[in-house]
Amino acid sequence: MSRVNSWARAVRRAYERVATRFESGVQLLEHRYTPLGRFTPGPFEGWAFLWQPALLGFVALASIVAGVSFTNSPFKLDMPNTWFFGEPVSGSGGPNVTKYIVSVVLVWGGLLLLMRVWLRLAEVMKHHVGAPIKRLWWIFALWSVPMILAPPIFSRDVFSYAAQGEMTAHNVSPYLYGPYTLGDASNAYTLPVDPVWSNTPAPYGPGFLSIDGFIDRVSFHHELWTIVGLRILEVIAVIVIGFGVTMLAKGLNRDPGEAFVLAAMNPLVLLTLIGGAHNDALMTGFLVLGLGLAVQRRPVWALFFVALATSIKAPAAIGLAFIAWNWHPPGVSFTQRVRPFAVGAVVAAAVLGVATLLAGFGFGWVGNLLSNGTVRSWAAPATGAGMAITNTLHALGAHSIELASVLSVTRFLGFVTAVLFTLWLLWHSEQRGWVRSLGLALLLFVVLGPVVQPWYLAWGLVILAVSYQGREHFWLLLLTITGPFIGMPGGRQLLAGLVHSNPLLIAIAVAILGGVLLVPMGRWTQWSWPEKEWVPSETTAEVG
Image (tube, rainbow, N blue to C red; front, side, top):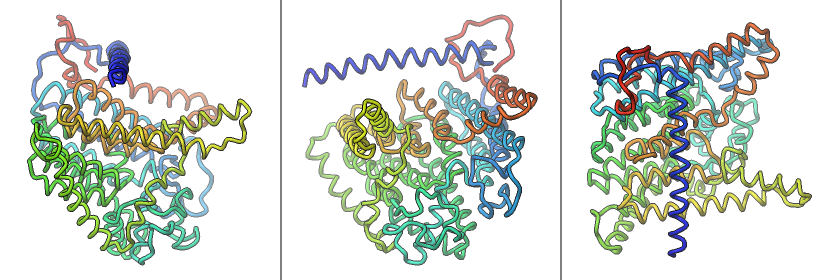
């Protein structure tokens, strides 16, 4: 055991050295090569500046919506009758290369601007507490409008939800059959579904299927209006996230304003949970609300809401364990810590039992939890390692070894590693902070899982937004500004389009994207840097 502890300390020291150098390098590049290095910071002058990031963020999100609204945009499903605008009509001509490039530049430019605005606003919140929550809610509302109006972006999952809602409404079990059970590919519900999931049973909990089926019935089985209903559902869920993180922040004696900006106004949340209408928003909303009740010492209600979150998606069940383990104040015996697990089991069983009864399809979703393992992506370390090992073995002549066999091993090792680390975090949650430990555990299950999707990262990031310590703030920001680009379409197509375009169009596209990265955003950004790091000067230069 002493040797293991010694190795762990050595790994920790190596991580600290590497992370410190990396973070310092990023800050150096920001200071030297961006407009952030062009000012002399003055004393903080209050929150009257908030209208500037509010407007800039809205412009960025409006640019994204404008870009995805082109009929040949690669960021949405380019299929007739899947949204109210921006979709091709039947029999329309081929794609226009110029419009295609304009679409991609608008989206990527909007994304870069949004990340810059949010990053600087998040840093301001870190260094200056007490931001007015009401103003932040208004900014959230302003930023949400473009994503509410936008067609489903960056993912086609919501079309699978709609098909599963139609199946639920007609008492066809989504736990046994895939969306194509509704009919052939010409069916309004099945046509937009990604072929990868066409015959894949649903891995979602009975709570979500009940809500999904209800929305489909309310829409009178109209596919497009079912999509609208699901979008509205996820908007409400993100609002719940906003209320939940402010409640949680107050319970943990953290700044509610910073927690709100890092969680509810997080670009990953706005783009994927609202823009993509993913049910992860509903799971995360119930989960954060339960955590807020837990820190207020209302554990039964906390278990109830976290069990509701589990009835949407299974990963929320990890929260049940952390709440039960930390039911009592610090310093109690092991036996006292274990007893609340019985209460948690009863509450969870009751909630899941009622949800299962309402849905009417049994517990088949438990066996479908690994269905997304059919997707093979280098973004997931466990899957990427398996693919790399297989390619290496094939290059060495071992062609008899199949990729599926190697993936089963690497993914199993990833799962076991996540479980072991989670148990360690649970055991040490009293010393490390149990809410923070839960956020890290959820991130571990995402990163070490078979598939890493941007919206999965929101599970842990939203919780860490309220509970981070030290360098975790840097990693939270880094995952947020890079997460939406995981597997995002458009980059390769943009380069291919530029190669075949005229030089003027190439120059304009490069100038726009470069300008978005370098253009100053206003004097307010000076307050995103701690004053002690800068040497005052008599002349104040243009601010970044």
